[in-house]
Length: 87
Figure 1 (spheres, one colour):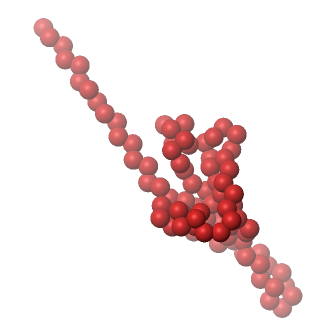
Figure 2: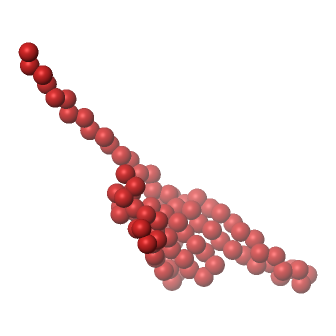
Figure 3: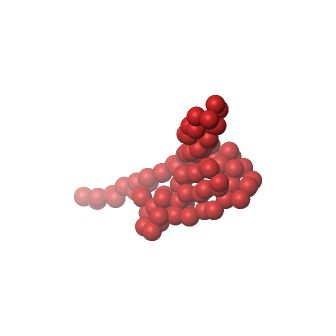
């Protein structure tokens, strides 16, 4: 009896999105309010954001969470390194 080993492939697809948090101040009528706007960006929007402006890109110590910030905007995303660690 011949036993065949079946090869299996696992294909992992990472849909690249980013989450953008933007803090805005409203000084209307001397009543200071801070508003938080949260947006979901696709890959191209994220790339365009990072290309424009003065962004600082960092990651957590365990390398699993890359993020970028510029002025009052914070951007969280996944990259090749973080995906490889999490899989």
